[in-house]
Length: 435
Length: 155
Image (tube, rainbow over all chains, first blue to last red; front, side):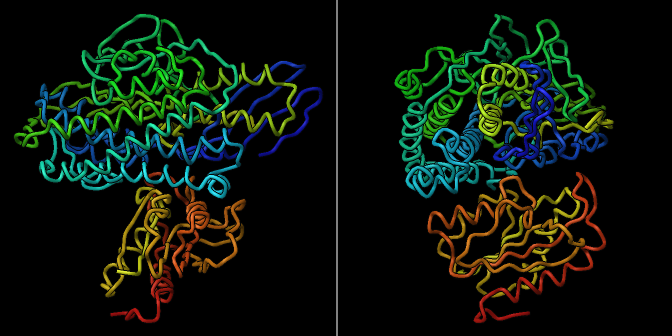
């Protein structure tokens, strides 16, 4: 972190954002008492996956896209499967959809726990990082690692491997876990549910700055359940649209300071995806234990303070544990673990709720299944404009703080969004203007 | 199994692949009593260190004046590893942080060695550089040398 005075103004710069997945940098310029520029800069090498997918067979995108992110491989696999199946006119039966949801619960537990305990909690408890926090709060860190391990175990059980699950294919799975294997996972998940509830209690006791934001929220929504592996889009201003309309509603643009595309709604501008949006648009879809935990934590039906996202993430860990137990309890034997997905020429769309927010993919296939074009819109690129707008307002109201403290608080504000900067970068040839 | 060899890195990112590549070569030696795994998330180390007699971690490294392919061997002792430099490890939530977290939680194994192979380009889709390829066997030897003496070598 560097900071320097510039004439009458000053600049806040965090050259490498600590505790953000991937690599990124923040640059805020203040002149004459006004925030004049805010840039979340991304210098992770550009992602080349969209280009790499062209010319591949229609069964390959789940495996290939899972390598984009070591934290949320399932999200990439699931959105890819849904998009390819959509292009081929196939919908999977209920038991395959349920098993996908179960796998995805493992990723939510793992990813949210990593963020809540090891990346974000140190901000609220006043430590530079998890290592220093572990000295004074060993039980807290141990609980986080235990929860994360439960998520990993679930991903390994259903996905075959905790990172880059190998049991997933277009059309379903190579094999289903047996009912006995699923029952054996129950005790660890019950303990995880207790740990998740303790996580909500812990996070709700943190101090939060007064910082309500009126961002437009976008999330998936279903007829029945809290959105994870399925749903259609809804927005906080009351719009609703199908996944296939994503490209008509959302424009991706590039900005000079970033290799990630910024997404905006064509008719209303920047928006936010992720836990706050999901929660606020689906509060009535929370399963009972999670609903109770949210009430107990003092969260209303909507949450507009990005700093409280740590509480909402904790509630979503409860959702994932509760849903995983429910799926295991109602699982009988399942039918075939996959359905055939014969290729055909067409376009398909898939969207699922990655831990960080909605992840959209679109594929154009030739008649033999060859991928002609692939588009991947990860959550962080959708949130980037809103993160910058948060920083603008946040810094403006805190100019009385010294630069070091203000920089630290800005980094915390960025971590509210759990940005996965490595997934947010696209394959683009960009000339970076100015230093 | 009381010895563990861990290769860390992303096979799609140029020289960052060196951890998994070295791990694969060590696995082919079929050393008795030695388990070989690869992770691309360094924090996974925290879960897998306890209960091991010896652990060797191989990762791509960056140091100020290093040349690609240079093999660094660091025995992790009682002093904390420096965390404010990019001396070792190429991952956001780095290997060094994972090890120090394990230390704070009392989870360090009796013997822990880091093998850092100096990386050149780590762009997505880049091939592994010739300089790193040329030193892979040196890195494998460093791993084997770091395993406990009781472990049969070079089988």
